[in-house]
Image (cartoon, rainbow, N blue to C red; front, side, top):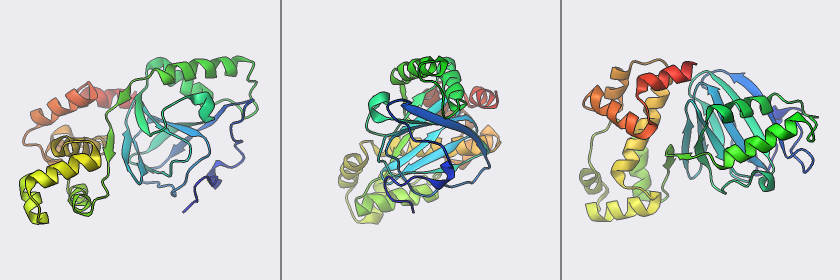
Length: 264
């Protein structure tokens, strides 16, 4: 496990950002299933999946980055990445004072313009001229990034032992239909106590948390090419229409349209 602030050796000779070049980046193709070691950086990191799907994990929670989304990881946050499908991705490392982004991980919506800016900056040589075209691209990218809307794709992980055990059960089997009342009885607590603890630990109600978990699992299965109907039943929905309605509500589009964009 890499220590906090330790440089990931896979970055090779890529220089760290500095006041002269406040952001540096690269692009890469990776196979499905690749998992990085736990590590952190002394600078912020923007990860964008141009194609494919990845999950970012921290001790506090999970984030997925489907098509047209990117995840922001602040400096000092210990994390790792797993590829849920074959992945083409871009990484930008930025000085915190230049990025001026929140001090917590979050997924942002990537507009077509922001996408092109991220891709182009990831292709710039390490010794790019900050007073030239690359510098202008970076200035526009940072402006667009700061105004990009956040997406509800974060799954917080609790620490309280009873809630953690409940969560780990659902992580193992997202389609488990057991309600909170039954889960509370199994844990030896009242439903009211479990509901209160769950919201205090995660900042979300139990139903919303389970819906977000199922969405994350569904995104991974869709990225693997599994049919929508099969995915709907696999993550615990009684019908494909109920799953599609949830997907459209959260993602702003149907699974079919999402898949078309992911393949573009």
